[in-house]
Length: 479
Ligand code: GLU
Image 1: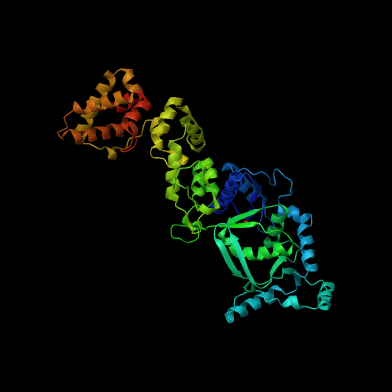
Image 2: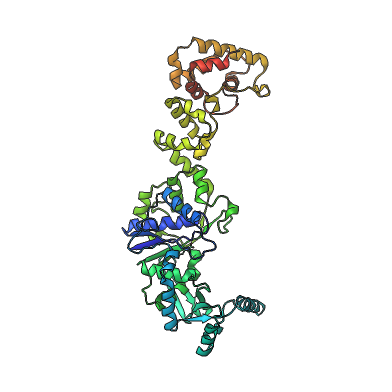
């Protein structure tokens, strides 16, 4: 079984395309088939090498390796349509279709086509080419060719019923009479997407065309084209659309849609793979956190859904949090490092870094979230007196008591969470702020936190103190 991902390099790798790539890749691995990467750059105006590079690097980051592709070659090379065009593949196929009477030259100018479109609109007719040039006599065609009149080549659709036996959607019926003859070769000799896709899928032995539902209207055209070229039809499967929370097609206005944006924001590739695998598919036991191996084992066309899949970025963030907290700490540390802008992080001892990491991961949803919330660990805060959470005399008493107890405690106390915690409790019990113990403890903690970190909220104070150690903590609560 041969699957393929066939992106057009006209933009950066989009979540929707990445999901298509993932499903093809997972299916190929499940069936022990091949996964082929083909670059569809026949739209020369909109395609560029930077987009192609972005797509490849995005796929690599997601670990979706391909068996054949533009950078690695394979039996069906080249894998870039511009290179295939240079070999004359598309021109030859067009010639065959012309000779067989399944294609014809269309000399209509864009002005004429535009006028036809307007007329359709006016008369409330379905838009589309009405086949005028199909009726040209051989003499007129030859005259036009002698005059070097610009022209395209159109494929002649056969009217009738057509059924796609879609592996996800079941039988989808089309009335091909409603589909107008479409261009397969443009005026400049380049193929259109339809011709290039059909021919390459056939020549590359693709058995399964798995792509987004937005391609469903193209499929009847491509099926007739495939048959006219004398090739066996591949199986088709159209993946459900990805929708924003308002159920409209996922777009920029719903937030980030490029894979890169997620990468830069500090999502792990395994999160994205897991998350995307659930966009239109579910595990038989409805498991949500799945590694890619479990997806490979359990994927089947039957379980891929027809209905649109809602893209819920909050779920993606939750998932990323799960992946981060279950990550081996040293590995997580390695992955967090590039996201930390402040180089002073590197001045911390390895155990301090690890402790900090654990502490911050409780509230972190992305790797980027480790970029803040720890400055207290490398520098004493500049205190903002307006933040002092208690009355001045209370402040003085809290600091005096804490200082005395910190100074009296041995260094072992500052190496154990439990003992540090107890020390903080003792400071509170030893004080009478006239508030009842619960409330007074809150005030004591707030005051100490304020002095030690400059903030009124943050991670557990005992952890903060453990990370700073005794001397630094003592320094910060001195008056
Ligand atoms: N190149 C097409 C696209 O990027 C995909 C063609 C296909 O999957 O058949 O939308």
